[in-house]
Image (cartoon, rainbow, N blue to C red; front, side):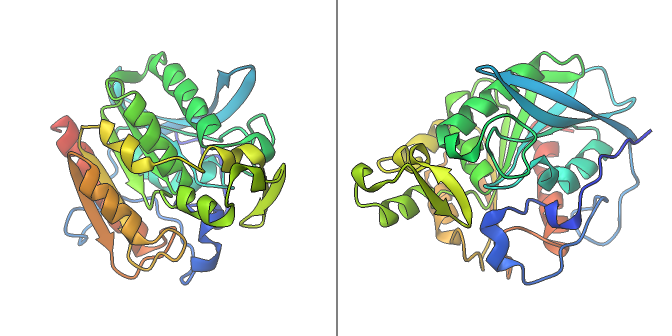
Length: 298
């Protein structure tokens, strides 16, 4: 039986604080998968169960929800979803619903200090790119030990800042990560930080970012960071999806990522902003399912 942990529509489909100014269309919930022609809905393949599951990182508890398909095999391909800045695990629920129905285990979690609604330990003022990378590494280690997860078929799926974190983490653990899916990844983070602060000495102990308070370390680690030197170390095929009307993370940042990745499927959604809604969620789900089917030869 499906045991849903409900969330509001505003928390669905990879929405985060970066997307606040791009919500041009109504946020909708989508829990069906579509064929590659977007004409007919596929039949639901599997029922699934959800339950809370914790990881631990340096004494801090990381809260998450795992979606486990029923009667889909002993060890199943597993997707780890990472949310964006200021958001929570709930932003991955639409994708998790559909992926679980198609036989994939999905784990959606809250970064420590990842947002005001986080159920994981730690304040936002202690959060940074590297603390979130460390959280994701702890999640990866934990999920590999779960009896239903196939440790040879683990895929990272990240949205916005969670996409940037997933990209960096996958580059550091390419032998353990079979696939990587990035939705409007926030590779703009470093440039934005350098524009705001001329030097490390100019960074205060805390400051406001997108209406939320972050700490000195958030900016300091980005002042001399180059995503494009790091992410190409992941040399397996990447799925990269971005909207051409994204006013928070311009599509040019993903265009550059597509140039440096050794193997990439780059999809641009016409008219989509930062955060996908409605038909854009459906299109993205088609890309994801197609990518996974090819990746695992299903």
